[in-house]
Image 1 (cartoon, rainbow, N blue to C red):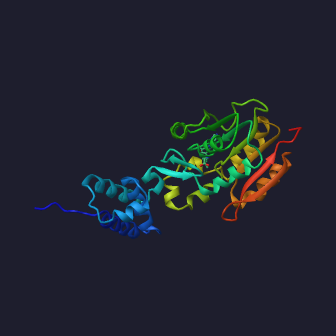
Image 2: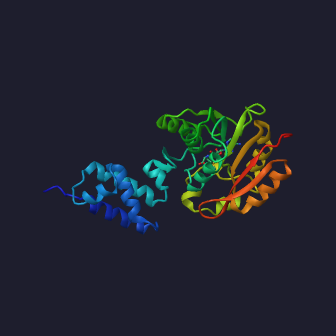
Length: 284
Ligand SMILES: C[S@@+](CC[C@H](N)C(=O)[O-])C[C@H]1O[C@@H](n2cnc3c(N)ncnc32)[C@H](O)[C@@H]1O
């Protein structure tokens, strides 16, 4: 019996149909991305090669990837990578998938400080620390997380990117001495448990809850950073925090009452109040 020949175009069309059936909003785009990751090359190569036969092993890998995605696993986990600013980062269940909102926090900080010593608290995949090491001119970039799994992923990403970042297993910035840093940046967990329960299953069921839930009121880690961040920054040092848009004004009020100066709130690319910037005052 002649061997069944399947073309790349037919394979992608079948994958897109299965993804559409699972209720995913962009089935064709996702099927094409999954195939282009497996086959190598870009979208132009897919178009040019759509009538080419694919080998059985590649078709089986594609089939497995489509099955995982159909069950709701995030695309970044299925393909194993996600893009963040100039970086392509390994992505899996060990850490939060970097979000486009977080990219804006880095711009805000780089507009204010580009040199000295900086700490990224709750680094996850390492996306913030690695971007700062790549784009800034910092003398030292340190990053902490209390998840060993996240730090393992961040270290793999650092080795792939090839920049100098020191990763430390720590509760926030506890190991560091007074005035150790010129800037502290963090995208801490900032959802309430109820908000977390209401998330889309592709986030709630696949990404680490500890990366998302910030205590009962969502403010637990943010408040700790506002209090403990004063100790590790030098006078005048910058604090840059990602915050929940529904609690940005509250976070700014708390920052002012704790003695931070030049407190400002900024919107993200979706127009939501997402970032808090502040400076450590001279008298702490
Ligand atoms: C929202 S994720 C951010 C990850 C990454 N910075 C990003 O922007 O994609 C928050 C991270 O903070 C870490 N984290 C939560 N509580 C922490 C604590 N007390 N000390 C250190 N890291 C903590 C979590 O493990 C998680 O990796």
